[in-house]
Length: 232
Image (cartoon, rainbow, N blue to C red; front, side, top):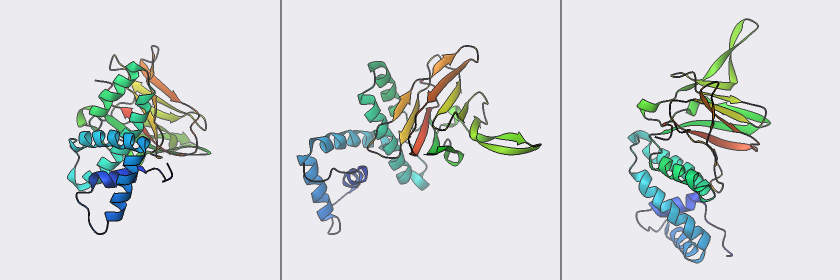
């Protein structure tokens, strides 16, 4: 259609507006008209509305509840897009993960520009205490003095869990094989129009670890999401 398609923020504004006011009237009418006329946006809005109902039931600390729910919804939208093209077995796993997303996910921020940078400050912003992962940069000794290696992070509570930059555009996630099923690993672009890349790690018998390798990342910002509960 002629009108520019709606952004994620447009749909959220329409979904969360409790009433029409003089200030938002023209915007609400514009969005509503577009949803009626554009089948693609209409389908996206219906998916978002269903996800919003799920998110509303999540327990998130009140001091940043609204902002965190919005961020979680952006990630869940990307996972839903990936689910559409996934195999039936993987799609079923993704659906189960989404239903319990806040209580079973660890998050690391990634910036790709020339090489990958891992931002540990947002690690594990949302994981229940019983399945917590607490990643920290590793101290690398150089010339006798310890220094943080920003290309490698290890879970402070379980050193078997690690994330490392493997080449300029690849990362490797290693997870303790404490479950019979491999925890899913997702790389989610900040661009809400794009789908996530979801990987089921492969079991390494020698190391007794689940190993996931994600290659060919393009420039941009991402979230690396780990299913911390190991598919349970």
